[in-house]
Image 1: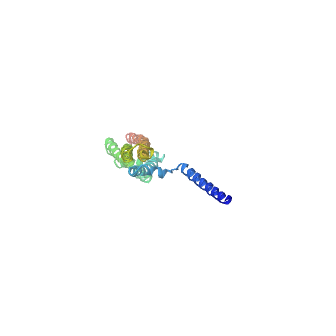
Image 2: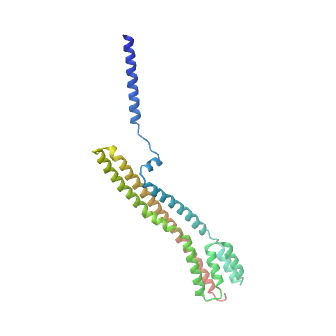
Image 3: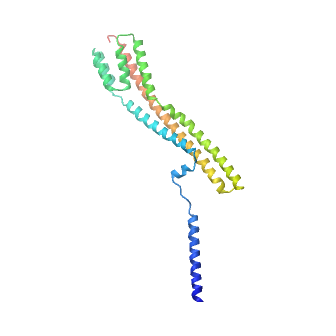
Length: 235
């Protein structure tokens, strides 16, 4: 009889221990990594993530392009001026072509117009400058568009999240955390993602525009100095 009691007591202890372990496992909070968290945002996260990828590609491609264009040869204008003042026009053209820079192409166009009125030379340089600026600004406006669209998509996700909450509440017949958690995930994750990507695109858009503006100012300064040189007597 004592042996039977001991056996029952041991079985009861084992059952209690198993139940306590199960409760401990259930009490452990579920950890989410970034990918899992983004997936909670629902299907609206697909276009939002695509906008993020597009923004990163455009920003880094334009950033390195503009930075490379900003690496002026500090001696380019002085070499061109020296050759022009010495009457070596072909040498000046060779220097411009060898530079392979926006300023070099602008000065080359001006040198090809030497002998014509200054207004014609200035107009030719200005036209080339506009083309160079257009090349530098290529696709930058897309970042501005992304900055506007991404938060809107996040707002769309918010609306779908609210709709999902009402649908789950209707099915369950009452409000509880289980019925609203899915919709809240969609609402909050999509909104946060859309706003974050919109802010990043907005910042990238203005960074690139500031880089282009600085480059344009330098190009215009050197072009004016070149025009003034051609306008000097004896050139």
